[in-house]
Amino acid sequence: MGASADTVGVVGGGIVGLAVAREIVRRRPGTKVVVLEKEDRLGAHQTGHNSGVVHAGIYYKPGSLKAELCTRGRLLLKEFCAEKALPYDECGKLVVAVDASELGRFEALATTAAANGVPGLRRVEGSDLTDVEPAAAGLVALHSPATAITDYVAVAAAYGLDIEAAGGEVLTSTEVTDIRRGVGGIDVTTSRGPMRFQQLVVCAGLHADRVSRMADGVDGPRIVPFRGEYMSVRAPKDDLVRGMIYPVPDPRYPFLGVHFTRRVGGGLEVGPNAVLGLAREGYRRTDARWSDVRSMATWPGTWRMARQHWRTGVTEMRGSLSVTAYMRTASRYVPAIGPDDVVRLGAGVRAQAVDRDGSLVEDFRIGHEDGITTVRNAPSPAATSSLAIAEHVVDRIDAAG
Image: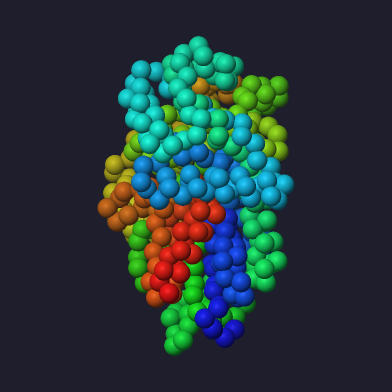
C-alpha cells in the first residue's frame, strides 16, 4: 500500500479504535482509512467483556478528560443508538453508602458528580431508597436516572458498518508486528504483509503499551491486566433489581467495586471484582502467559503498586476463590441476594495502565507526535465516551496538520 496524505491506519478493532476510524471517514470524505484488528472479530476483548453500562459522569475528576468526554460521549452514544435502533435503556443507577464509614467518601462523590453536571442527579435518604430500588439497603444514595445500559458489541459492529459504508476497510485477523517511520510515510508490518500510512492511530487496548512503544519508542506506562469476574443471579431473584446498584468507590482505585447491573438482553449480573491477572487475554483464573508475566515483573511500577496495595489484592483474591466471600460485600447492598442465588458467569480483563512510580493511571492518556497518535490508557468510561474520544483524537490530528 502506497502512502498519501489521505491514508490513515487505525490499530485496534475495539470500540475506541472503530469510533476513531468512523470519525475520520465522516470528517474527511475520501480519506482512505484502514482498521487493523488482530482477532477474527471486532470487540473481542474489553469491548465484549464489560457490564454494558453507559456512565453519566458521577465519578471523574472535574476538568479531566474522563469527565469532559464522558459527558459528551453519553449524549452522542444515546443519539447513535436511537439512529441505529440499538438497545439503550436508561434504567438508572443508585450509588449507595451502607455504613457511616463511607459517608465522607459519599459526600465527596456527590460534590464531584454535581460539578460534572450529572443530569437528574438527586440524593435519596434511608428508607426512600426502596422507592427507587425496592430490594436495596443503605443509609443514603445518589440516584442517577440518566445512567443507562446498552450492547457495546452491537455498537462496535455498527461503527464498523459505518466505516465500510464510507469506503474504509476493516481488516480482522491482521496483527501488527512492527511500526517504523519511513521516508514519506509510516511503515507497518502486519500478518497480512507490509502496509504504509501517512498517519497512524494506535488504539490497541490490552496491548496499548506494546504497540505504542513500536510506534514511538516510549516505554510506559505499562499495562497490568486485572481480571474482573461476574456472577449471574438465578431466577426468580434476577428481577429484584430494576436498574443498577453500586457501592461508593474507594478513591484510591480506578475500579468502581462489585455492583448489580441489569443487561439489555435480560438477566441480572453481579460484578466485576478486580484480580491481578497473569495474562492480558486471560479470562480464566488458570490462564497465564509468560510474555505478560515478564512485562509486569520487569516494570518497576508493578512492584511499587504491589507494595502499596497488597492487602486489597489479598481481599480481591479471596473473593475470586470463594462465592461466599465474593457475595459478602455485594449482599450488603441487596440483602435478599446471597451466595446461593448466584452462579459464576464469565470474566473480562481491564487494561490498567501503571506508571513507573506505581500509580494507577486514572485519566485517558492520549499522545500525538509526527503523524502517530497513541491511546495508551482508555479504561472505563471509554465505551461510553467512544464517540467523544474519537472527536478529541481527530481534533488533535487536524490541529497538528
